[in-house]
Image 1 (cartoon, rainbow, N blue to C red):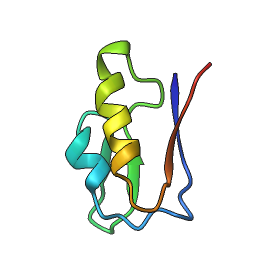
Image 2 (tube, rainbow, N blue to C red):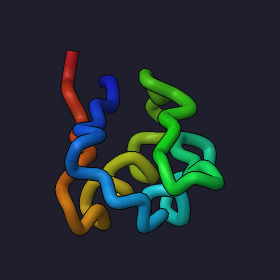
Image 3 (spheres, rainbow, N blue to C red):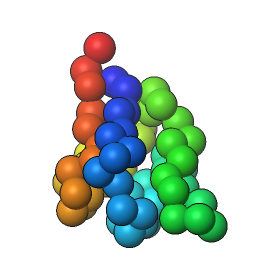
Image 4 (cartoon, rainbow, N blue to C red):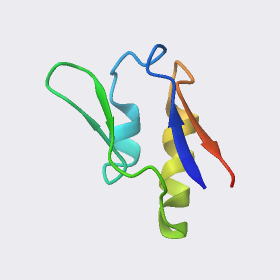
Length: 64
């Protein structure tokens, strides 16, 4: 599993960071930083919650 972000769609609302703070971080300028591209199985639920909560659908999970 890996995470992909469409940065052109991200508005920096921070829902992903709230759902998965170990995976995402909103910077001071409002941009999104992906902290972990390939989350562990233990982080799957948090990653899925971040994807589901993103109002712009900028985040997706890709199964390898």
